[in-house]
Length: 173
Image (tube, rainbow, N blue to C red; front, side, top):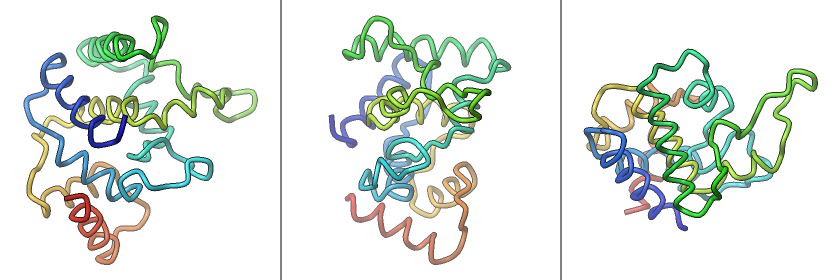
């Protein structure tokens, strides 16, 4: 599945099944454009996961944190059922991807990390992450830029990086 289709499918799932109130297709497109040149990145060299470059900390905060509320846990359960229906297997569970191994102080299972690069899985997890922010997803390019830098917190926040993020987004159009 290509990234555009994955983003649309994840956003429709979130709005139809998870109670998301805003359309996040354009904002997710912006994030993927800024983070990975819309999915054009070296998966093997990437320290983060997928076209949205979800780092292990954001993944943990979104999916594995034991302090997540009941509503958020219900979203995760519904996401598992959705992804199982999409053909990822009856035992597929997004909470078991990229599990931290305290003995080796690393993420233990490379195969589960690899699946996080899958466009649909990465889009669903990103859409769930966006639901933690209660503000509606922005649709205007400058608003998307500001929210992206606020939520994703890239290492470099400069005018050059902001301009490049906008250019990459506009190139997807």
